Length: 365
Image 1 (tube, rainbow, N blue to C red):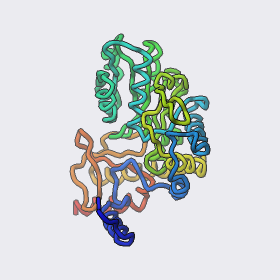
Image 2 (cartoon, rainbow, N blue to C red; image 1 turned 135 degrees about the vertical axis):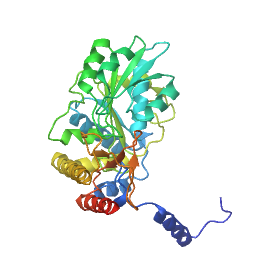
Image 3 (spheres, rainbow, N blue to C red; image 1 turned 90 degrees about the horizontal axis):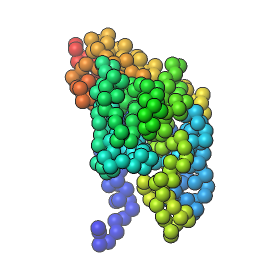
Image 4 (cartoon, rainbow, N blue to C red; image 1 turned 180 degrees about the vertical axis):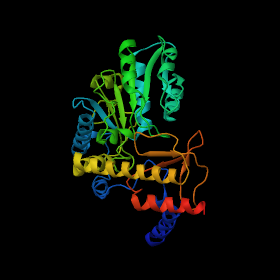
């Protein structure tokens, strides 16, 4: 730390230079985040100093968190669901594991997770001492339903399904998992961090949410397709009483018990997440998702015209190809199986898609 403070002009010149080293989103095709909606940025700035870790000091912000939970719960077809704003899918998934473990106290707990599951489940496993049993994937990169039964036993505390997988953008057979969870009395968590704000707005409905009676909890990230500021996630639970199993005493705060994982929690991104959903409404969100899906279809069509076969037909706006190279200046990613992976986020508009396809075409010239 400096002995004498840095002048503001020099400081912000330095910060500006560092910011310029960051990549611009326009050529980033590998991220599940996107520049925040202008409404989100404006709302975020209004709530910079708010802390939901001590909600009695910020009752207005706490009310916005409740409204955000209500909006997302209604979207998941259970308006009375419990929930709270998390930092994102990792925290939500860890908390779901905590709840599941509390609901079924066994000596050697295990959780059945698809091979496509996010790496946050490994973190949850390490932190909580829950064995992870991995379900292999079928030819379309969804969890293989025929392999699930052999992995479930009396010590299974949780089943995990993914609605919009990180690598291939497909939805696991959640309806099958729901039936299995009910039959075996096992907690079922759906990781819809990405797909939770995509699937409800598709023309083709895919069952994944609380309409399925076996689904106990769902994670959704407004800072992904919800175009909120970072960090903004949400964990929803079918029964609000699930959270009571996580209570710890907080005697010196305005609430005497809390069940969240983080203590200090930003209110600004919660306000931003609520603001976007409220501003756009169902019609606005549907238009955003429709545009992203159309751009995804155009990208797949264009890549296949160039001779790069799709790895799978996605359910959401994630495209993968048998392609081992990308034009200079573009940031794509690779799946574990080696496929090129592109996320058609709102910033990946038609012009961006066409520019990328043009550069891909030049590679073959």
